Image 1 (cartoon, rainbow, N blue to C red):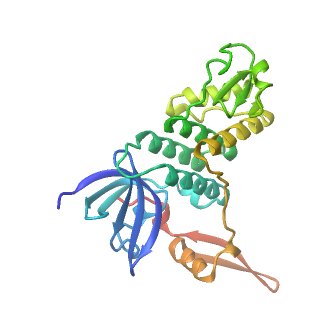
Image 2 (image 1 turned 90 degrees about the horizontal axis):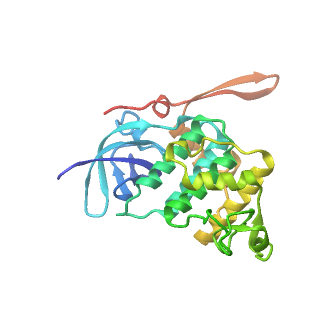
Image 3 (image 1 turned 30 degrees about the vertical axis):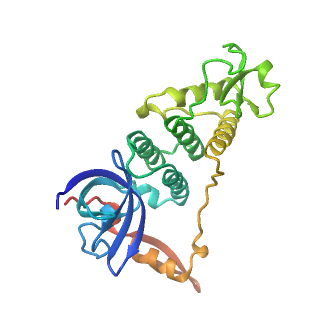
Length: 288
């Protein structure tokens, strides 16, 4: 069978059989696709690192009847710091769920993939406020999906002056006079207005290169959340499990997949966890 090289990022993984995996991958040209990775769960598998969630890589695969089959892979980026920080992980999973919902097979997803990679990089490698990062991601994603806010002038009277409201109903800025008559309009500061304009028009590589002070950040978060939920007709809430929320079987599976060993310390009569050492295969890329 003919094989092809495809760049993509793993959005979801599930166990299949004794050692195999079924993956969901986002690609630039084929959209969201299903892939099987035979033997990927074996400790010495060459596919072990490249089939982890959030791994971005180059995959050599062939297409079967209903799914793709991975022969080999070369990892490009693992976003390792997301795996070791629960807050970063929570926000990354939130982003992942949204991407899963808005993408389909056989569609061009280049811009969505680029946004996803830039967002995960910002979460993983910087200390930028996570709420701001998610808000930027949501607003830019709406622009890609065909719901860009109208930011040049008041959507009602067309004036370009005194644009101090954002209308959820009418998808953009409104002047003070028109905004006060719109029950869906949210008042905003000049900083928030500038942030919305920037996110809608900035080059992809510079999208996350700004910060907002507390008051403007709260306005920006509120506007982007309501606008995003209204356009996608679904309310998204960031959720994550704590360790105690998992069943014993799920806890054992997580330990087997990600942890090499656990160092314990005895403090009086109490045994405490001193350090958790993650598997090397999770930390490093493996080139095939």
